[in-house]
Image (cartoon, rainbow, N blue to C red; front, side, top):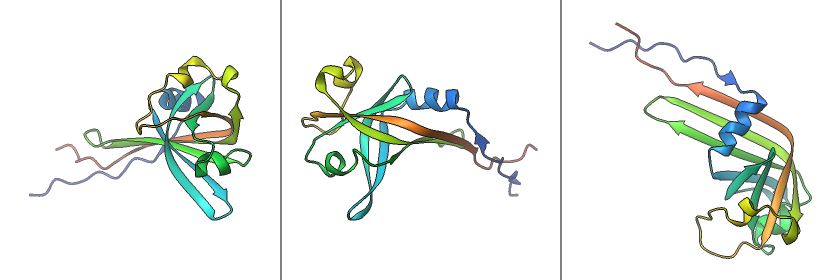
Length: 142
């Protein structure tokens, strides 16, 4: 006999405090922007400090050359297979290259997954922060 499946619960909209708490819990994001060749998206290691997102890259990388000065979207999410839940937070904002003397220690010390020098520190000042939490279908109680 098949266990009946209950309908999926509607997504929950997250408030700004919940979004920033979730952003602080992760270290990998995807940065998307529109450049001369169209839309680009790349993963980055990041930290959330004082309601801004920070990442490091190389000035000559596509991200370093094209993302600063134009609006970007930064997406962070997590999927919990055991709990059948997921969340996603999107930060839309303006990235700014930051002079080395003005880069917080936490940005200088952040873990970078792919080896290599990342001499350009970028702060994304948010214009909009949105988040959703979703729950998958669960078997109905018997």
